[in-house]
Image (cartoon, rainbow, N blue to C red):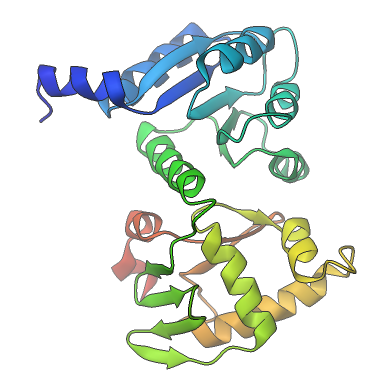
Length: 252
């Protein structure tokens, strides 16, 4: 268990989170849970306060509710993406897939539907923070379960055995690996894979993903590495996310 002194030191030097929600109970929940795990927290209850604090405090991470009293939280995402690269995790009771896609393509890094647990938020926060740190210098090797993706040498293996991929299959895997842990929307992937024809039929992406899964997944019919975010896109799981769903369970 973390001592009082250790907890104090962690919250003095840990990543700074801007928690934006008009509900005081939610803000207390966020502050308590995040500070217990070494984060520092500043709070805002309106879109205006969020924008001001983002400029003044330069947070490492923004946890943002959409239902703010003075503006939709999406306007905060848009404003911050005009100048800040800080990861943004959106919180909302709204479950519209179209809205999730719009927010992710507008600059949000992840999306959690209320109600949610602190363990889920912490796992998502660690993923987007690691991604932010490695943006300029991507990890040369991404490992999750038995899958290994060497980005520098363009080598892929599973359980120690080499996997041969076509250039387009590797391109798809590379995008997911660089952003592993975070969802990539269909449109984001299409724009990366077919920059000259970004509005190509998404069915081509689905076919490409099926071929990739046939290569990298132990059971392509039940993927555990490159998983589908229904009606949104795909995500390459991190080891932490794989552990969370139970590696033994998903291998059955």
